[in-house]
Length: 308
Image (cartoon, rainbow, N blue to C red):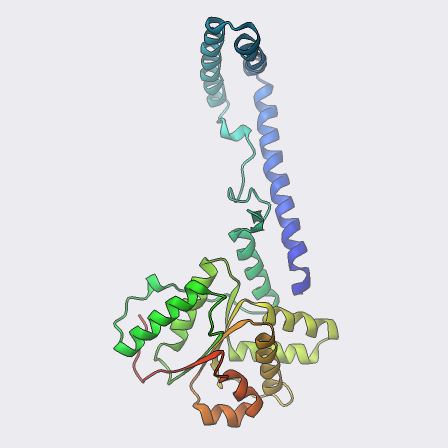
């Protein structure tokens, strides 16, 4: 379940740190068993003290220079000995799967990209979904109409100031193949690259989660819905193509959208339905929330395929 994801990731990091530390320790033990390496290592450690003594206490720069020359010679010998043992200097140091955070999951007081990637992967998996392909503006080289060029320009501004954009939600309306999903995946991919948690889910996938939530235990209901509500950015793709389950589909979509609005989360909905069809299918309360003028931009796409 999603509530256990962070402790699971923390345990994973601990195991990685332990594995890498053990690997370095075993390599050191292997090297120290070689008598020549052991002698060289012992002399190197003592030289550090005598160099400091010559420079700081005795003021004997000539002696310090001689000792430093000897130190360099020993490092060269050390390297040759390690090569014979099929080892390198780096093999004696603790390596990191993620050098940025040193396998702690945090860098500069914030979650590292590797942590965010793990959280996203395990959260999607716990929801019973498959990760989708995320895109960026660099991936999109297709020719666009003047109107779509203006839209892309506005979306770029939105992404750059996220999550402080005045517009919190988008409703993309248009027929199949006009680029609604493509653009929403670009928005999600750009935000993931900026360090935010984003999810692209089809309405059918969400509907299956809603049914599982509806039939599950109370704690499971809280867990599934909290995960969906807490994403910084959520794309509900192809709304209107899902099967309708009584007391589930419309009710849970309303709850999801309403809770995300209440928490100031950002949501994109793509649909082939027009405004009247949306209101008829999901009700006035849902329609009023997904078309709320202060926070939502409703975009109509024409019947042209702009996807790459």
